[in-house]
Image (tube, rainbow, N blue to C red; front, side, top):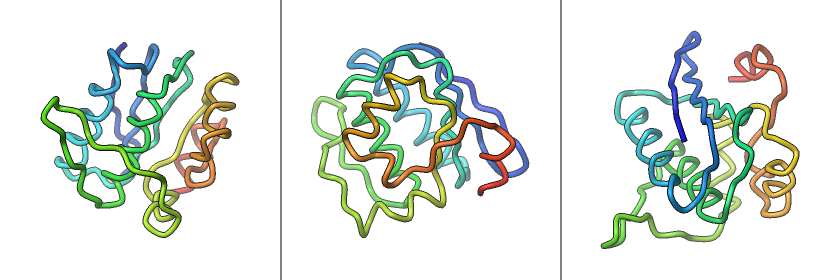
Length: 133
């Protein structure tokens, strides 16, 4: 998996290339946390080149949401964040700070099933996504 970050007028686009699974999910979290620590407050996750997201990948996306809504992320002894259920009150503000671009159909279906699309806007056009922040 590869991750690149680019800035577009106050919005950081994190392009993820490759599967987000148990071997890569911490990289997604770490890069998002680093961006947040560096002052980024609006993040567009470009999922165009992500063919697969496992349950660990879903946890990574949820953790990114928590980071960008200002919630603390508790790290377990093994270096993994603790997982908690999606909270409609706490996570609703995610729509203002984290958005998704072009998830592949299989990934989009998984995001729908687990409910992440209730909290994250999904776009198919980069310019429209950038304007939405």
